Image (tube, rainbow, N blue to C red; front, side, top):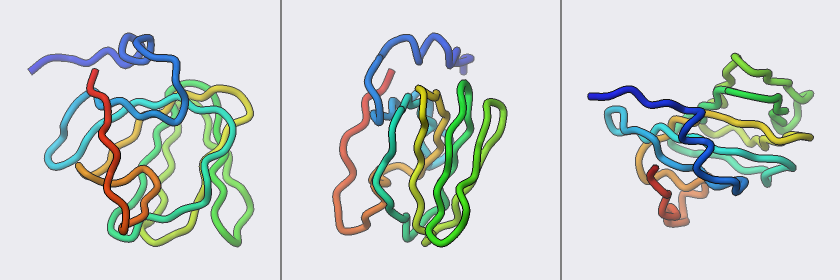
Length: 118
């Protein structure tokens, strides 16, 4: 058992849309990610999608709804099966929690890309 310094972990990489695993929690991976711009619309058929903004501000676009602003210190959970797209005008740092093996895109017909552990 040990503590995990998220700021320290985020300092290890500069890539965007590239989640890095920092811990395991039950059958889930706890990850940090940086992003700017927009991710394609997608959905996760078998799991909710968890976002906790550590630094910055992001928008969560939900198909057929107005955009939701999520600021540092706030979390946003997209229910499974809901089409969504995270985006940010400036770089944002986010904590994600996903079941192990879940593809980033949520596409159930696609193998999950390997995630870097730091």
